[in-house]
Amino acid sequence: MDIQFFTLAPSPHLVGVLDELHRRPSVNLRVVYERKWLDERSWGLHSGEGPHVYLGSWDVTGYGQHVSLRLRSAMQGAAPDVAVVNTSYVSLNTYALICLLSRRDIPFVFWAERVSRLSHPLVKWVRRPFLQWVLERAAGFVGSTEATVQFYRSSFSYEGPATWVPYHRDLTPFLDLTSATNPDGRVCFLVLGSLTRGKGIDTVVRALSNVERPSEVLIVGDGPKREALERMAEAQCTHHRIRFLGRVSYDRVPALMQEAEVLLFPSRHDGFGMVTMEALAAGRPVVASRAVMSARQYVRPGANGWLLPAEDASAWSEQMEAILDARDQLPRWGQAARDTIRSRYCVKEDVSRLLRFLDNLSSVQMSVPAADLPG
Figure 1 (cartoon, rainbow, N blue to C red):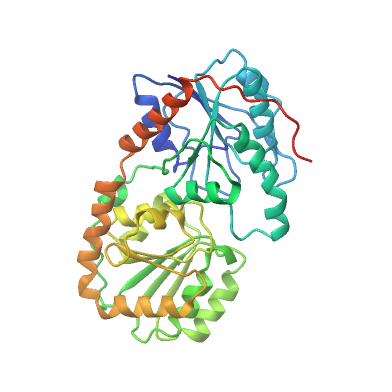
Figure 2: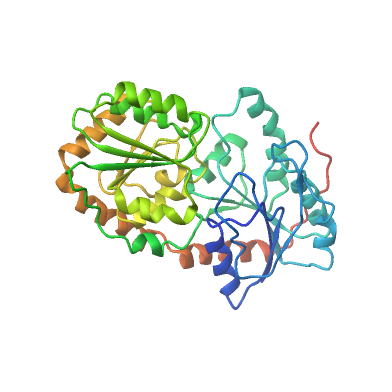
């Protein structure tokens, strides 16, 4: 099967899927990246093992409206059985690409995360017709989780074929970690993420002010809310040891995970959230908000972690207190976390499901009607 895969930029979170596709003898994969680097990311270049090209797109407005004059030439001579469109609905390249695929009668699937629930109501209203335009022309839809597929069905009335495939990266550095040992006996919680409102770290700090047992908390990341969070922590959480470590390189994350015993993931929205998978692989139970899609897919409350309301600081206080009261259960929770990765998170199985889905779609050549963008 010939597959042309269009996506934004090389990512360590997607490269596992792309490499597994490339290794399949039955697949001829070609990846087209809109950009080579993302300025806001420091994770390096992870373009994968397979053939790939870069379009050298530029962002017209600074908000993801990517344009490339090389898109047509990148398509020239290509006749894939199916295309995967994993570019954003805000990218102008997406609409040009779909029109080009339509003219060549090449079926495509739209692969997407759940769009942000934090968007302004006006943004939600504006984006609806654009996403519907894409979905109406897609031969199928791929979501990053089962809940993602359900969201697009319920929110955008999508009724076509669909499946789900999570992101994958090499989790070996996390699977190799041992149990954490804290010399002074405190349980160490880890928070990883940019210090913005969307990441919900203020909920954790507010929650800690009501947790009586002392703990240690590592907060890794930087952003506009750092100063306010540091002031809040200093004023309200004096009996906890809270360390703001700032931004760290991507390859340092396993070492930080080694220091911690529990991951806290309080995001108000996360379309997937690879850190859930990294923590589970490390044998660290995950306390996450219900707005984290990876946690909704893989966290089993009471077994390998817990799911809480994003804004309910009292629920976070109670859960952290419960963990501190039952710290002798950490090895059991940690084993369940690692078992989740070994039994329910397999790139070979996920890619096989994707290929069955694509094969079914490509067997019937579906024509995509050309149409004007909604205005």
